[in-house]
Length: 245
Image 1 (tube, rainbow, N blue to C red):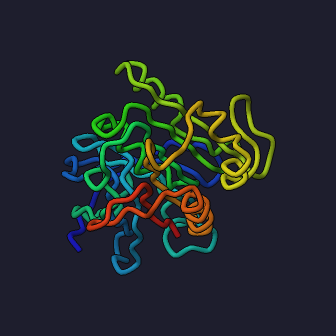
Image 2: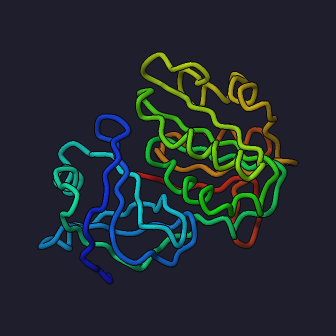
């Protein structure tokens, strides 16, 4: 691993245990959707992977959830602005848009910090090379964990693009405009497509799934029942997934 010491430039807290970390130093060269590894000084062997939420050329940013009892995030969350972390400066991963064929509607479906790679894709503007309409679906347990929505909607409006943003809150009453319950239930009931104003189909859609493996497993089954197939390098399909666990 190519670790460099980087200072913390900023923390943004979205809700309990959910933050955005921004680092000082040179911007990284990467493809939106890729991840980097972080560690603490003196403990490079305890490194974890986090997707970049920044766009290429912007200050390095990741979207983090604190894992109680975890080996890294509880200590990482104790650090302040100006403190040092170790950053692996070689981005990795294949959850990138160059593997997605152009489509009419691109669905970016994530749970928790699985939203991070989509933030990078939207900030970079690369999604608009692949789709006419983008539907962002963010599933969280608590309404306070819905993040980035206002910024990304503003970016789309400035660019004159069609972005639909849908929050789905599973463990408490959602705010106005968001849905209650689980992502799978929202898709099965038709509530998700109704909120988006877009029908999901093999003919006109590609779905990216990022987050909890259980969510990915269940949504893949629902998508396959509708005739969508897994996207593979040698056999293109209509959904692509990345597990965050």
